[in-house]
Length: 464
Image 1: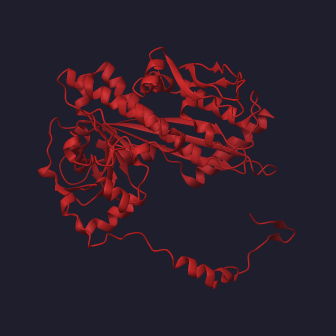
Image 2: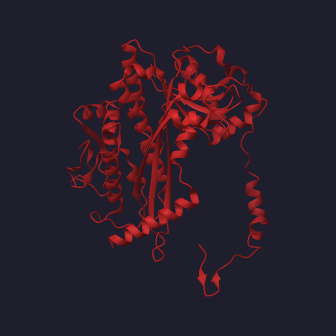
Image 3: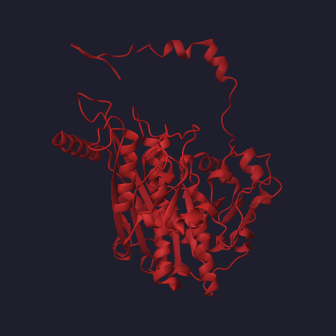
Protein backbone atom coordinates (compact mmCIF):
# COMPACT_ATOMS: atom_id res chain seq x y z
CA UNK A 1 0.00 0.00 0.00
CA UNK A 2 1.64 3.32 -1.01
CA UNK A 3 2.35 6.07 1.48
CA UNK A 4 0.38 9.28 1.10
CA UNK A 5 2.49 12.42 1.09
CA UNK A 6 1.79 16.12 0.60
CA UNK A 7 2.53 15.59 -3.10
CA UNK A 8 0.10 12.70 -3.42
CA UNK A 9 0.72 8.96 -3.30
CA UNK A 10 4.31 7.79 -3.60
CA UNK A 11 5.13 6.21 -6.94
CA UNK A 12 7.38 3.28 -7.76
CA UNK A 13 10.41 3.74 -9.94
CA UNK A 14 9.78 2.72 -13.56
CA UNK A 15 12.96 0.63 -13.32
CA UNK A 16 12.11 -1.01 -9.98
CA UNK A 17 11.68 -4.44 -11.60
CA UNK A 18 15.12 -4.46 -13.23
CA UNK A 19 17.15 -5.85 -10.27
CA UNK A 20 14.81 -8.86 -10.10
CA UNK A 21 14.69 -9.48 -13.85
CA UNK A 22 18.49 -9.31 -14.23
CA UNK A 23 19.42 -11.22 -11.09
CA UNK A 24 21.36 -14.38 -12.11
CA UNK A 25 20.43 -16.17 -8.87
CA UNK A 26 16.71 -15.81 -9.67
CA UNK A 27 17.30 -16.99 -13.24
CA UNK A 28 19.14 -20.04 -11.89
CA UNK A 29 16.28 -20.83 -9.48
CA UNK A 30 13.71 -20.58 -12.29
CA UNK A 31 15.81 -23.01 -14.29
CA UNK A 32 14.98 -25.74 -11.77
CA UNK A 33 11.28 -25.62 -12.73
CA UNK A 34 9.25 -26.41 -15.81
CA UNK A 35 5.74 -25.63 -16.95
CA UNK A 36 2.95 -28.13 -16.18
CA UNK A 37 2.44 -31.16 -18.41
CA UNK A 38 0.80 -30.04 -21.65
CA UNK A 39 -0.74 -33.37 -22.60
CA UNK A 40 2.37 -35.43 -23.42
CA UNK A 41 1.61 -37.34 -26.62
CA UNK A 42 3.73 -40.29 -25.49
CA UNK A 43 1.16 -41.18 -22.81
CA UNK A 44 -1.47 -43.53 -24.25
CA UNK A 45 -5.01 -42.41 -23.45
CA UNK A 46 -6.82 -45.16 -25.36
CA UNK A 47 -7.24 -47.52 -22.36
CA UNK A 48 -8.88 -44.68 -20.42
CA UNK A 49 -11.36 -43.53 -23.07
CA UNK A 50 -14.93 -44.78 -23.50
CA UNK A 51 -17.56 -43.60 -25.92
CA UNK A 52 -20.79 -42.70 -24.15
CA UNK A 53 -22.79 -45.21 -26.20
CA UNK A 54 -20.47 -47.97 -24.90
CA UNK A 55 -21.03 -47.17 -21.23
CA UNK A 56 -22.88 -49.63 -19.04
CA UNK A 57 -25.89 -48.27 -17.20
CA UNK A 58 -29.50 -47.20 -17.59
CA UNK A 59 -30.57 -44.32 -19.78
CA UNK A 60 -34.04 -43.98 -18.23
CA UNK A 61 -35.78 -42.16 -16.76
CA UNK A 62 -35.01 -38.96 -18.59
CA UNK A 63 -34.13 -36.04 -16.33
CA UNK A 64 -37.03 -33.58 -16.25
CA UNK A 65 -35.91 -31.25 -13.46
CA UNK A 66 -32.53 -29.77 -12.54
CA UNK A 67 -31.51 -28.14 -9.28
CA UNK A 68 -28.35 -26.02 -9.37
CA UNK A 69 -26.67 -24.02 -6.61
CA UNK A 70 -24.02 -21.33 -6.85
CA UNK A 71 -22.66 -18.77 -4.43
CA UNK A 72 -20.76 -15.52 -4.54
CA UNK A 73 -18.63 -13.94 -1.84
CA UNK A 74 -17.01 -10.58 -1.21
CA UNK A 75 -14.69 -9.40 1.54
CA UNK A 76 -15.02 -5.68 1.93
CA UNK A 77 -11.82 -4.27 3.39
CA UNK A 78 -10.71 -0.80 4.35
CA UNK A 79 -14.24 -0.16 5.55
CA UNK A 80 -13.27 3.08 7.29
CA UNK A 81 -10.69 5.70 6.38
CA UNK A 82 -9.45 5.82 9.97
CA UNK A 83 -9.44 2.01 10.34
CA UNK A 84 -8.40 0.59 6.95
CA UNK A 85 -7.69 -2.87 8.40
CA UNK A 86 -11.40 -3.42 9.17
CA UNK A 87 -12.96 -6.14 7.00
CA UNK A 88 -16.50 -7.43 6.52
CA UNK A 89 -17.58 -10.65 4.77
CA UNK A 90 -20.63 -10.71 2.50
CA UNK A 91 -22.01 -13.64 0.52
CA UNK A 92 -25.14 -14.88 -1.17
CA UNK A 93 -26.26 -18.28 -2.38
CA UNK A 94 -28.62 -18.72 -5.33
CA UNK A 95 -30.60 -21.83 -6.09
CA UNK A 96 -32.51 -22.51 -9.29
CA UNK A 97 -35.09 -25.17 -10.06
CA UNK A 98 -35.35 -25.75 -13.81
CA UNK A 99 -38.17 -27.57 -15.57
CA UNK A 100 -36.14 -28.99 -18.42
CA UNK A 101 -39.25 -30.10 -20.29
CA UNK A 102 -40.37 -26.49 -20.58
CA UNK A 103 -36.87 -25.22 -21.24
CA UNK A 104 -35.52 -27.64 -23.82
CA UNK A 105 -38.47 -29.03 -25.75
CA UNK A 106 -38.68 -26.36 -28.43
CA UNK A 107 -37.86 -26.02 -32.09
CA UNK A 108 -34.52 -24.83 -33.47
CA UNK A 109 -30.96 -24.72 -32.10
CA UNK A 110 -31.55 -21.76 -29.77
CA UNK A 111 -33.17 -21.66 -26.37
CA UNK A 112 -35.80 -18.96 -25.95
CA UNK A 113 -35.08 -16.57 -23.03
CA UNK A 114 -38.81 -16.35 -22.43
CA UNK A 115 -39.08 -20.12 -22.17
CA UNK A 116 -36.16 -20.17 -19.74
CA UNK A 117 -37.85 -17.54 -17.57
CA UNK A 118 -41.06 -19.57 -17.51
CA UNK A 119 -39.17 -22.78 -16.70
CA UNK A 120 -37.05 -21.46 -13.84
CA UNK A 121 -37.77 -20.74 -10.19
CA UNK A 122 -35.00 -19.15 -8.16
CA UNK A 123 -34.22 -18.01 -4.65
CA UNK A 124 -31.29 -16.00 -3.28
CA UNK A 125 -30.10 -16.22 0.33
CA UNK A 126 -27.87 -13.32 1.45
CA UNK A 127 -25.49 -13.56 4.38
CA UNK A 128 -22.96 -11.67 6.47
CA UNK A 129 -20.02 -12.71 8.62
CA UNK A 130 -17.55 -10.55 10.57
CA UNK A 131 -13.92 -10.48 9.56
CA UNK A 132 -10.96 -8.72 11.12
CA UNK A 133 -11.15 -5.86 13.63
CA UNK A 134 -14.92 -5.71 13.98
CA UNK A 135 -16.11 -5.27 17.55
CA UNK A 136 -19.17 -7.31 18.53
CA UNK A 137 -21.73 -5.96 20.98
CA UNK A 138 -21.67 -9.15 23.08
CA UNK A 139 -18.51 -11.14 22.33
CA UNK A 140 -15.11 -9.55 22.83
CA UNK A 141 -13.25 -12.35 21.06
CA UNK A 142 -13.48 -11.94 17.25
CA UNK A 143 -13.42 -15.70 16.60
CA UNK A 144 -16.31 -16.20 19.04
CA UNK A 145 -18.28 -13.48 17.27
CA UNK A 146 -17.59 -15.21 13.95
CA UNK A 147 -18.84 -18.54 15.35
CA UNK A 148 -21.97 -16.91 16.77
CA UNK A 149 -22.77 -15.21 13.47
CA UNK A 150 -22.24 -18.42 11.50
CA UNK A 151 -24.70 -20.25 13.76
CA UNK A 152 -27.17 -17.37 13.47
CA UNK A 153 -27.11 -17.73 9.68
CA UNK A 154 -27.69 -21.49 9.88
CA UNK A 155 -30.52 -21.07 12.40
CA UNK A 156 -32.33 -18.28 10.52
CA UNK A 157 -31.97 -19.32 6.86
CA UNK A 158 -34.32 -22.00 5.64
CA UNK A 159 -34.51 -24.40 2.72
CA UNK A 160 -38.11 -25.49 2.04
CA UNK A 161 -39.13 -24.35 5.54
CA UNK A 162 -36.28 -26.27 7.15
CA UNK A 163 -33.46 -24.31 8.83
CA UNK A 164 -29.92 -25.13 7.75
CA UNK A 165 -29.20 -26.37 11.27
CA UNK A 166 -31.69 -29.21 10.76
CA UNK A 167 -30.16 -30.07 7.39
CA UNK A 168 -26.76 -30.19 9.07
CA UNK A 169 -28.25 -32.52 11.69
CA UNK A 170 -29.59 -34.88 9.01
CA UNK A 171 -26.21 -34.90 7.30
CA UNK A 172 -24.50 -35.79 10.58
CA UNK A 173 -26.88 -38.73 10.99
CA UNK A 174 -25.18 -40.26 7.95
CA UNK A 175 -21.58 -39.49 8.97
CA UNK A 176 -19.46 -41.53 11.42
CA UNK A 177 -21.09 -43.89 13.95
CA UNK A 178 -20.27 -41.40 16.73
CA UNK A 179 -21.87 -38.54 14.79
CA UNK A 180 -24.90 -40.67 13.95
CA UNK A 181 -25.40 -41.68 17.59
CA UNK A 182 -25.36 -38.04 18.68
CA UNK A 183 -27.64 -36.95 15.82
CA UNK A 184 -30.16 -39.64 16.78
CA UNK A 185 -30.63 -37.61 19.96
CA UNK A 186 -30.88 -34.35 17.95
CA UNK A 187 -27.38 -33.45 19.05
CA UNK A 188 -24.31 -32.58 17.00
CA UNK A 189 -20.93 -33.85 18.12
CA UNK A 190 -18.24 -31.17 18.12
CA UNK A 191 -14.98 -33.08 18.28
CA UNK A 192 -13.05 -30.46 20.25
CA UNK A 193 -13.96 -27.37 22.25
CA UNK A 194 -13.43 -24.36 19.96
CA UNK A 195 -11.69 -22.44 22.74
CA UNK A 196 -7.94 -22.89 22.03
CA UNK A 197 -7.22 -22.35 25.75
CA UNK A 198 -9.65 -25.01 26.97
CA UNK A 199 -7.91 -27.42 29.40
CA UNK A 200 -8.99 -29.66 32.24
CA UNK A 201 -6.94 -30.57 35.30
CA UNK A 202 -4.75 -32.78 33.13
CA UNK A 203 -4.28 -30.00 30.60
CA UNK A 204 -6.50 -31.63 27.96
CA UNK A 205 -9.28 -29.82 26.05
CA UNK A 206 -12.86 -31.02 26.10
CA UNK A 207 -13.63 -33.47 23.30
CA UNK A 208 -16.82 -34.91 21.82
CA UNK A 209 -18.92 -32.01 23.09
CA UNK A 210 -22.60 -32.70 22.39
CA UNK A 211 -24.53 -29.61 21.31
CA UNK A 212 -28.26 -29.28 20.55
CA UNK A 213 -28.84 -28.82 16.82
CA UNK A 214 -30.80 -25.60 17.39
CA UNK A 215 -28.96 -23.91 20.28
CA UNK A 216 -25.63 -23.38 21.98
CA UNK A 217 -24.25 -25.35 24.91
CA UNK A 218 -21.49 -24.51 27.36
CA UNK A 219 -18.26 -26.46 27.21
CA UNK A 220 -18.19 -28.79 30.25
CA UNK A 221 -14.54 -27.89 30.90
CA UNK A 222 -14.10 -24.17 30.24
CA UNK A 223 -17.67 -22.88 29.93
CA UNK A 224 -17.14 -21.44 26.45
CA UNK A 225 -20.35 -21.34 24.39
CA UNK A 226 -20.29 -24.07 21.72
CA UNK A 227 -22.60 -23.87 18.71
CA UNK A 228 -23.58 -26.81 16.49
CA UNK A 229 -21.97 -25.11 13.49
CA UNK A 230 -18.61 -25.38 15.26
CA UNK A 231 -18.58 -28.91 13.80
CA UNK A 232 -17.46 -27.23 10.55
CA UNK A 233 -14.29 -26.04 12.32
CA UNK A 234 -14.13 -22.84 10.28
CA UNK A 235 -13.12 -20.88 13.36
CA UNK A 236 -9.79 -22.74 13.33
CA UNK A 237 -8.78 -20.82 10.21
CA UNK A 238 -10.33 -17.48 11.21
CA UNK A 239 -7.80 -14.64 11.20
CA UNK A 240 -8.75 -11.83 13.62
CA UNK A 241 -6.11 -9.51 12.15
CA UNK A 242 -6.19 -10.16 8.41
CA UNK A 243 -8.15 -11.41 5.43
CA UNK A 244 -10.71 -14.19 5.86
CA UNK A 245 -11.67 -14.61 2.22
CA UNK A 246 -10.48 -18.23 2.19
CA UNK A 247 -12.54 -19.01 5.30
CA UNK A 248 -15.55 -17.38 3.65
CA UNK A 249 -15.03 -19.52 0.54
CA UNK A 250 -15.06 -22.71 2.60
CA UNK A 251 -18.11 -21.59 4.55
CA UNK A 252 -19.93 -20.79 1.32
CA UNK A 253 -18.99 -24.14 -0.20
CA UNK A 254 -20.29 -26.01 2.85
CA UNK A 255 -23.55 -24.06 2.72
CA UNK A 256 -23.99 -24.81 -1.00
CA UNK A 257 -23.49 -28.56 -0.56
CA UNK A 258 -25.83 -28.63 2.45
CA UNK A 259 -28.54 -26.76 0.54
CA UNK A 260 -28.36 -29.22 -2.38
CA UNK A 261 -28.62 -32.14 0.05
CA UNK A 262 -31.45 -30.38 1.89
CA UNK A 263 -33.48 -29.91 -1.30
CA UNK A 264 -33.05 -33.59 -2.16
CA UNK A 265 -34.08 -34.67 1.34
CA UNK A 266 -37.18 -32.47 1.15
CA UNK A 267 -38.22 -34.06 -2.14
CA UNK A 268 -37.59 -37.49 -0.62
CA UNK A 269 -39.88 -36.63 2.29
CA UNK A 270 -42.64 -34.98 0.26
CA UNK A 271 -42.57 -36.43 -3.27
CA UNK A 272 -40.09 -39.32 -3.57
CA UNK A 273 -41.46 -40.46 -6.94
CA UNK A 274 -40.18 -37.17 -8.38
CA UNK A 275 -36.54 -37.77 -7.41
CA UNK A 276 -35.62 -40.19 -10.26
CA UNK A 277 -36.40 -37.39 -12.72
CA UNK A 278 -34.24 -34.85 -10.85
CA UNK A 279 -30.65 -33.79 -11.34
CA UNK A 280 -28.66 -32.02 -8.61
CA UNK A 281 -25.77 -29.98 -9.96
CA UNK A 282 -23.07 -28.48 -7.75
CA UNK A 283 -20.85 -25.73 -9.11
CA UNK A 284 -17.49 -27.23 -8.15
CA UNK A 285 -16.31 -30.72 -7.22
CA UNK A 286 -18.14 -33.05 -4.86
CA UNK A 287 -15.52 -32.43 -2.23
CA UNK A 288 -14.89 -30.55 0.98
CA UNK A 289 -11.52 -29.02 1.69
CA UNK A 290 -9.59 -27.77 4.68
CA UNK A 291 -11.34 -27.66 8.02
CA UNK A 292 -14.70 -28.71 6.54
CA UNK A 293 -13.32 -31.91 4.96
CA UNK A 294 -15.03 -34.26 7.50
CA UNK A 295 -18.40 -33.00 6.24
CA UNK A 296 -17.88 -35.06 3.08
CA UNK A 297 -18.66 -38.27 5.02
CA UNK A 298 -22.13 -37.12 5.97
CA UNK A 299 -22.83 -35.67 2.53
CA UNK A 300 -21.97 -38.92 0.80
CA UNK A 301 -23.99 -40.74 3.45
CA UNK A 302 -27.04 -38.59 2.68
CA UNK A 303 -26.93 -39.35 -1.04
CA UNK A 304 -26.55 -43.06 -0.29
CA UNK A 305 -29.44 -42.87 2.16
CA UNK A 306 -31.60 -41.27 -0.54
CA UNK A 307 -30.53 -43.93 -3.05
CA UNK A 308 -31.30 -46.72 -0.60
CA UNK A 309 -34.79 -45.38 0.13
CA UNK A 310 -35.55 -45.05 -3.58
CA UNK A 311 -34.34 -48.55 -4.44
CA UNK A 312 -36.39 -50.00 -1.58
CA UNK A 313 -39.47 -48.58 -3.33
CA UNK A 314 -38.39 -49.72 -6.82
CA UNK A 315 -37.57 -46.18 -7.90
CA UNK A 316 -34.59 -45.11 -10.01
CA UNK A 317 -31.76 -42.92 -8.75
CA UNK A 318 -31.37 -39.17 -9.23
CA UNK A 319 -28.44 -37.63 -11.07
CA UNK A 320 -25.88 -36.00 -8.75
CA UNK A 321 -22.86 -34.29 -10.27
CA UNK A 322 -20.25 -31.67 -9.48
CA UNK A 323 -18.78 -29.50 -12.24
CA UNK A 324 -15.28 -27.99 -12.05
CA UNK A 325 -14.74 -25.10 -14.45
CA UNK A 326 -11.34 -23.95 -13.23
CA UNK A 327 -8.22 -25.39 -11.63
CA UNK A 328 -5.39 -27.63 -12.72
CA UNK A 329 -7.64 -30.53 -13.74
CA UNK A 330 -9.60 -28.25 -16.07
CA UNK A 331 -6.34 -26.89 -17.51
CA UNK A 332 -5.09 -30.44 -18.03
CA UNK A 333 -8.26 -31.47 -19.86
CA UNK A 334 -7.90 -28.49 -22.20
CA UNK A 335 -4.35 -29.63 -23.01
CA UNK A 336 -5.65 -33.14 -23.82
CA UNK A 337 -8.65 -31.93 -25.79
CA UNK A 338 -7.26 -32.65 -29.28
CA UNK A 339 -6.75 -36.28 -28.28
CA UNK A 340 -10.26 -36.89 -26.91
CA UNK A 341 -13.11 -37.17 -29.45
CA UNK A 342 -16.49 -35.59 -28.81
CA UNK A 343 -18.88 -37.76 -26.82
CA UNK A 344 -16.06 -39.48 -24.91
CA UNK A 345 -15.52 -40.15 -21.21
CA UNK A 346 -12.00 -40.40 -19.79
CA UNK A 347 -11.62 -42.26 -16.51
CA UNK A 348 -8.88 -41.16 -14.14
CA UNK A 349 -7.17 -44.04 -12.31
CA UNK A 350 -5.41 -43.36 -9.03
CA UNK A 351 -2.06 -43.54 -10.80
CA UNK A 352 -3.16 -40.86 -13.27
CA UNK A 353 -4.37 -38.59 -10.47
CA UNK A 354 -1.08 -38.96 -8.65
CA UNK A 355 1.40 -38.88 -11.50
CA UNK A 356 -0.30 -36.66 -14.07
CA UNK A 357 -2.65 -34.41 -12.11
CA UNK A 358 -0.33 -34.24 -9.07
CA UNK A 359 -3.29 -34.87 -6.77
CA UNK A 360 -2.58 -36.21 -3.29
CA UNK A 361 -5.56 -35.29 -1.11
CA UNK A 362 -8.55 -36.84 -2.89
CA UNK A 363 -8.93 -39.58 -0.26
CA UNK A 364 -9.50 -37.01 2.49
CA UNK A 365 -11.57 -34.51 0.52
CA UNK A 366 -13.68 -36.00 -2.31
CA UNK A 367 -16.99 -37.80 -1.97
CA UNK A 368 -17.36 -38.33 -5.72
CA UNK A 369 -15.08 -39.78 -8.37
CA UNK A 370 -13.47 -37.42 -10.85
CA UNK A 371 -13.83 -37.97 -14.63
CA UNK A 372 -13.07 -36.00 -17.77
CA UNK A 373 -15.86 -35.69 -20.31
CA UNK A 374 -15.87 -34.09 -23.77
CA UNK A 375 -19.52 -33.64 -24.69
CA UNK A 376 -21.16 -34.28 -28.03
CA UNK A 377 -20.72 -30.62 -28.92
CA UNK A 378 -17.13 -30.42 -27.68
CA UNK A 379 -17.55 -28.97 -24.19
CA UNK A 380 -14.69 -29.89 -21.85
CA UNK A 381 -16.15 -30.89 -18.49
CA UNK A 382 -14.41 -32.04 -15.31
CA UNK A 383 -17.09 -33.87 -13.35
CA UNK A 384 -17.40 -35.75 -10.08
CA UNK A 385 -20.04 -38.43 -9.56
CA UNK A 386 -20.76 -40.21 -6.24
CA UNK A 387 -20.95 -44.02 -5.90
CA UNK A 388 -24.55 -44.07 -4.70
CA UNK A 389 -25.13 -47.80 -4.32
CA UNK A 390 -21.98 -48.88 -2.48
CA UNK A 391 -20.61 -48.64 1.02
CA UNK A 392 -17.02 -47.83 0.10
CA UNK A 393 -15.09 -44.64 -0.58
CA UNK A 394 -14.57 -43.57 -4.22
CA UNK A 395 -10.90 -43.16 -3.23
CA UNK A 396 -9.96 -46.04 -0.91
CA UNK A 397 -6.84 -45.96 1.23
CA UNK A 398 -5.86 -49.38 -0.11
CA UNK A 399 -3.36 -48.57 -2.86
CA UNK A 400 -4.17 -51.86 -4.62
CA UNK A 401 -7.82 -50.90 -5.19
CA UNK A 402 -8.81 -48.58 -8.03
CA UNK A 403 -12.39 -47.40 -8.18
CA UNK A 404 -12.23 -45.41 -11.43
CA UNK A 405 -14.14 -47.98 -13.50
CA UNK A 406 -17.40 -46.46 -14.71
CA UNK A 407 -19.36 -49.61 -13.77
CA UNK A 408 -19.22 -48.49 -10.13
CA UNK A 409 -21.26 -45.36 -10.91
CA UNK A 410 -24.76 -46.39 -12.04
CA UNK A 411 -25.94 -42.84 -12.77
CA UNK A 412 -22.93 -41.94 -14.93
CA UNK A 413 -24.49 -42.66 -18.33
CA UNK A 414 -27.59 -40.62 -17.52
CA UNK A 415 -25.37 -37.85 -16.17
CA UNK A 416 -23.47 -37.56 -19.43
CA UNK A 417 -26.69 -37.59 -21.45
CA UNK A 418 -27.98 -34.71 -19.32
CA UNK A 419 -24.76 -32.72 -19.75
CA UNK A 420 -25.14 -33.06 -23.52
CA UNK A 421 -28.64 -31.59 -23.23
CA UNK A 422 -28.00 -28.59 -20.98
CA UNK A 423 -24.75 -27.21 -22.37
CA UNK A 424 -24.70 -23.57 -23.40
CA UNK A 425 -22.31 -21.34 -25.33
CA UNK A 426 -23.07 -18.42 -23.02
CA UNK A 427 -19.72 -19.10 -21.31
CA UNK A 428 -16.94 -21.56 -22.06
CA UNK A 429 -18.02 -25.07 -21.06
CA UNK A 430 -21.09 -23.72 -19.27
CA UNK A 431 -24.32 -25.48 -18.32
CA UNK A 432 -27.65 -23.66 -18.41
CA UNK A 433 -28.77 -24.33 -14.78
CA UNK A 434 -25.35 -23.44 -13.35
CA UNK A 435 -25.10 -20.31 -15.49
CA UNK A 436 -28.54 -19.24 -14.28
CA UNK A 437 -27.62 -19.83 -10.62
CA UNK A 438 -24.43 -17.86 -11.11
CA UNK A 439 -26.29 -14.95 -12.70
CA UNK A 440 -28.54 -14.68 -9.64
CA UNK A 441 -25.74 -15.10 -7.08
CA UNK A 442 -22.86 -13.10 -8.56
CA UNK A 443 -21.93 -9.69 -7.22
CA UNK A 444 -21.31 -7.06 -9.94
CA UNK A 445 -17.81 -5.99 -8.94
CA UNK A 446 -17.94 -2.19 -9.27
CA UNK A 447 -21.51 -1.58 -8.15
CA UNK A 448 -21.45 -4.09 -5.30
CA UNK A 449 -18.24 -2.65 -3.88
CA UNK A 450 -19.81 0.79 -3.66
CA UNK A 451 -23.12 -0.42 -2.26
CA UNK A 452 -21.55 -2.74 0.32
CA UNK A 453 -19.18 0.04 1.38
CA UNK A 454 -22.13 2.34 2.07
CA UNK A 455 -23.98 -0.46 3.88
CA UNK A 456 -20.97 -1.23 6.05
CA UNK A 457 -20.04 2.32 6.96
CA UNK A 458 -23.56 3.61 7.54
CA UNK A 459 -24.71 0.60 9.57
CA UNK A 460 -21.60 0.33 11.72
CA UNK A 461 -21.53 4.09 12.06
CA UNK A 462 -25.03 4.05 13.59
CA UNK A 463 -24.06 1.33 16.06
CA UNK A 464 -21.11 3.21 17.56
